[in-house]
Image (cartoon, rainbow, N blue to C red; front, side, top):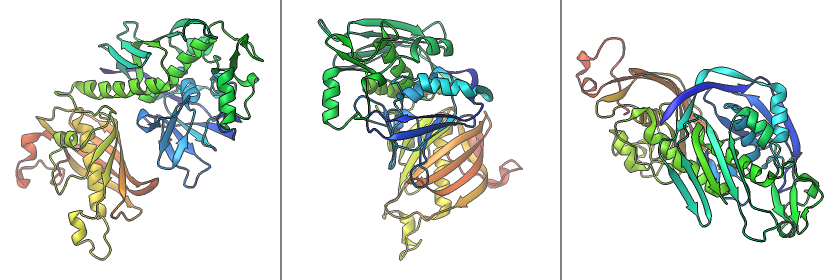
Length: 462
């Protein structure tokens, strides 16, 4: 279940870390900026045209070996796990991370440099509660020999346990560690633990052109006789780094997590699979909904699930898939614009352009899913009362895919307001602010003259 725990936090100033990317050897600078409540962690590729942004959420993770990578459109940011671990470990919830390359700096293979930079500017509380997912049932992910299990934790915090064991005779000995996560324990017990690999793996990576600017002084390389050209900071530094990676990957949930997590030989991919299952758990348990939302295995909603939440049908259903859903707070959905759309028959046959009012309607329908995920759908419906700040910035035509991003600004039992934007790629097509009332479904069906004074005839979106 979801519950509000502590106030959200952001940075009190701007922090910066510079270095070299481990994988591609690129010089890179990362700046950490304060952000508004409910922003989350967002990476901005300031080296690319239009400075595209990629939210640090599991829905944007793409498969890569030995690191966590997020991508949105043409913008990719690699090896984000140590940055994410630093932010999550220090309980910094809202931050704009500006980066001038496609890979975060490796520094010394740990989160220490990021923690020192963030501590240097400090953080502040914000007037908005941080939600936590409280695990109340066991959940397990298994991939080959890797096992990752989550259990309820009565301590009211996140406890992480990892057992590292590469088998009898392995160069790196078996290690186990269990840590109750807090900013203090992260700083003292996890932040300085470094990436590790075998000397044979280093040789293979260099032969593939990876890590050419990385030396044994930058991380932990294990040979037959132990660590090469470096010294351990902890006797069990390897397993501590595995837990550090878990902290960074679990932060892609976008919520605090209250649970006991037990891992055996798991890595970034297994962590992502677990986070997707936790996203599904959060959506199903949030806001005491009467029935669960039919999520796919990847945490998205297909059109059948959308139609179970919205009353709209062809030709007026303008949401095809939901990519992210934080009920009552945020939704990311898509609308695929086909040449077969019925409105193109008259708007206009020689120059097919999607009417701007329908783009706004698509935003409103995405908001409808956002509300339907946290109200009793059999009894209540969301109706539009006002639309403000409408801006139509670019035409939308056949072949475009609209990305609908809606943020819940104020959601109550009887009213709600949202801000929404529709994008094609990274270009904004339209934006608007919408207000709704949440009323009894029977009231929504009354004739116009019986609608209560104070608002015009509303449009149902949920």
